[in-house]
Image (cartoon, rainbow, N blue to C red; front, side, top):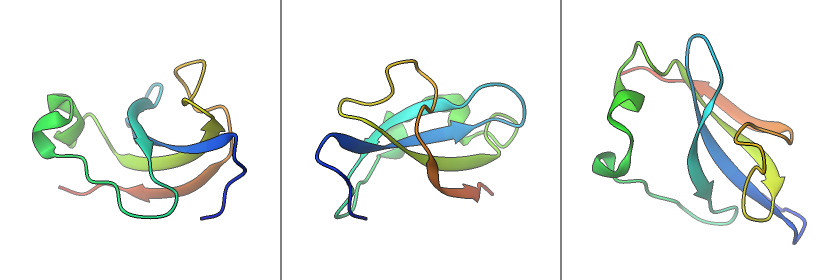
Length: 79
């Protein structure tokens, strides 16, 4: 995905209720691998995360701890 130089992609765990939780920045032009053991334990529990989403954020990631830019990818998480 082509981005402006001052923008990055950020991955979010989206719970069934409540605010999304950042899982970190991801590459816009390749593959990003997040090892299972590096994820917060509750993220992989189906009751804690119902979807994953990717938003466009300022360089360095969201300044608020919540998505601030448009969500460009989203999908349900099934474990």
